[in-house]
Length: 402
Length: 224
Ligand SMILES: Nc1ncnc2c1ncn2[C@@H]1O[C@H](COP(=O)(O)OP(=O)(O)O)[C@@H](O)[C@H]1O
Ligand SMILES: [Mg+2]
Image (tube, rainbow over all chains, first blue to last red; front, top):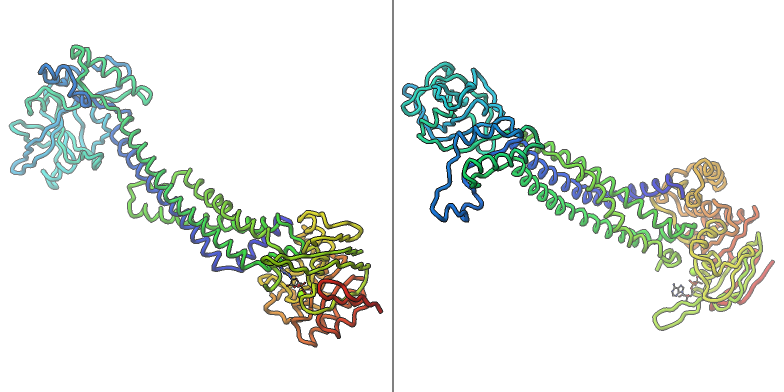
């Protein structure tokens, strides 16, 4: 039997039993669409998180005071020493590392910000000129904090867009003065709208020089030091350098925690990938259900088409040809169902994209390959039994009225 | 051409054994026109199925075209059936979703003949059995007589050594039955071998050689 004839025979069967064909296409289609849609959701979430971290700045290494995970067991704590503060001098010492491109020390506090009669409680950030680059922030107007000695306290400030509009309304904020506590700062820049990234909204902050913040909040202790490594490959070296430099300055105590953005991102990545895989696997079960449906439908077909199978045998069809006819039909149905599923899955994805434009929904390539492949393989596996039964049918019995 | 020697066929039904054929011995030559008659259950269909390689005898020797076929595998039997045997059934057994032409083509498709080789043969068969204007019709759009003509054309598609017809008129009225018999007799006139099982003495007596079966054995064999 020629391939063309095998295909057209199967095609005629599929056309001949329309209801049955549609049912299988539907079951297969739902299975494949479920896998595509679910993995697109998972992958979308993963990329969303990755993007959020990316917008924080690249190759970021964050230094915070205190050794979070082992703090309770530190000998220093046992003898009653409080953990050492992280200071500007510690940060400036980081210049010695070759793995570090730039860094920005950070102090944060709540400030009572006033312009004339208007007042607002706002987070106030003390930092240096480098913060702009490290956090990938952009200016809407004016300039960021000037370069220069971070120990020097200039009366200048940069405000977030929302702070500017709340304090000044439609009036121009640039060049005006604002008051934080009992100090006055001239506004030299307004930040571009950036929105929230990982719970921190740059639209709602005021940034002042580090030394000014130290004076405002009456503290030498830094909240964080943000460090940017020279490249992705340099991140582990930057981390090592930070730990070593500060340990030396702190008399051999490892009393800071160094987080790399990569490590955090990798954890999220692993969790979300595992989640996508698991949910995709659950969706794939619906494919197995479709496979069982195919088997049952095919078994019914063997009974329904007993006479036809008997006839084909009487006309000289071999067992192999009968099996081939059944497998061809199953594979065509699976391919058709998979095509329907892929199309429906993509339509679902487009719909999700319209509803949530910020999340990059996209089924990963392995799902787009695995779903149709699973459909075809289950179809073939579940047709083995019916096909064998058909091929073994006794033609005399099949053709008789009994 | 066909030689059966001591053919037995036993069915096991529950605890019992049913002897459908008891030592049937028979020789059929090329170009013969032979009818088999006998009471219901006498083994006529079983004999035809054995001759047509659809059923295997429980004992005995069957030679088809000088070849012992009793030991052949299922696939070898299928191939021999395809080349040498043409079946015509009481209930036509056409594939309902296929057109008349596609039904007639089926044996050639199974034999792997390519479409350019099938086309002229198909056209010749359609013309020969008066089905040209019915070629595209499906079986449910055809009369009983037309269905049986399609079945005969299909049986002839591979130019078989023998046509085996099991009560081909059993499901047709008298008039249509005669028409169908005329078609089968034309096959015989053109040199074909025809073996016909029938209940109808009028039809059976037209054959040149007449067999009677009772209880799985051939009891008489007349020639004229
Ligand atoms: N598959 C079968 N299983 C059991 N008994 C059968 C089977 N086929 C035929 N028989 C029996 O064999 C005998 C001959 O049957 P059959 O050849 O169909 O007779 P006929 O065609 O002459 O009416 C009958 O007794 C019938 O019941
Ligand atoms: Mg019978």
